[in-house]
Image (tube, rainbow, N blue to C red; front, side):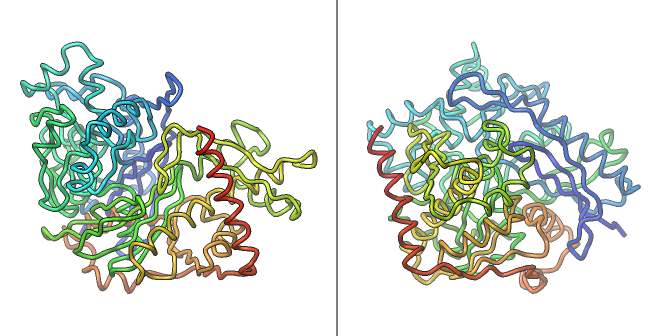
Length: 495
């Protein structure tokens, strides 16, 4: 009997592979950094071969670490950075352009033009999303127009589009599988989340040929089998979900009203709304949380572009820390009398503002401001942005859970999690299993092949490591949030 699920986590800054046991524990892990390229201001790209190469090497490394063979793997589950866009040749599997990453803002003017032409209402009604360069559709069109002959080749069926999951599936199966799952399709601006199909009206709006598109499947489904040459034998691929949806599954947020927030490069909060797609009045996104057995479950989502990236800025930009873990200690040493506010709009502001043209700023600097105050401001900026998201969710779904389940690298910071609970005025629950995104991908694959139990049983296995409860006085909390929103307002007003 197979002992493991092989979970692939292809993220924005690294690729990872993990072997997951039946009890949900991690048997082995391999990770490799993924290079990013910044060819112009607001442009973020990755080499397609780097994406696939890092994934392949991590998978091989984790099998070697555990002394495992292909026959020891029940199935593969994949989770991925969402919206990142690739177009490749069907014949060779080679991309015709670097992958355009979700953070890339080069199509902001295109989105503004489409909005001015009155397409925003149609896009929101069909997709639950906003006209923003964050999503895939305008990236696809850009590649087709930037690469000579690409549009013609796309229309004749020579080329394929996919988000990262789809590209990995194509390459892992030796070009036999061009598919995606509902959660990734829902992030393209081309997919009707109510009918569960690619939408011809949206394809026309964005100028994307239907011949480019992958087949859309459930999150737990048959996604093909790996080329036997890759791992010494074939391995079935049975689970796929975008990273934030995978984290929601890994956090066992299966009941309507439950909410999770993941802190990686960015921050993404999702609130389960059950089988009902809720249209937001607070500029949140309506998206597919997961699709199992042909049944779609929806979520409200708030997206923050800069979370862990703010700590990377402390390390790589300001060089006031040498490792991310140092930010916790440094922030705790900050002068309580200084109210320094960082608005980390390095690549624009996400929900609920959606202002791609805005850039970051610091407020409240004094002559006494030093590294400790900047570190605290960076960590608090993530908390303030989360407050904005949760407040917007509460406005759209008043009966939501008052407890926030958290995961991702930044949750290791006790300072940040305590300050998050303080500013939210609500408990923050950190689970024992920190690898919730990977666990979600593994669970979907394991559910499909019978390796893992049904969702209600799986939910009962979720375990709390620590609950952070609010300690800040209500009047202090209100004052700090007012300072934050005043800073954001001044920044937006100055554009």
